[in-house]
Length: 75
Image (tube, rainbow, N blue to C red; front, side, top):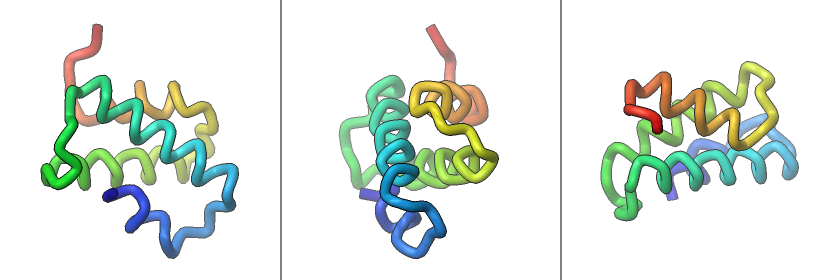
């Protein structure tokens, strides 16, 4: 999974990593991405990581911000 490779050497603790993984999974679900080998999942993982570094802690907010920043339509 793309997010784990990015988080492997990050300064985030277990709680933060859990929130980022939840946000990543929610973002993929919302975007309809099921194939974890799809290159777009790497882009999503980087975006979640980037937003996570700004201090946003809520996984759903992280996912919404990532979807917005990636330019995907929202419901």
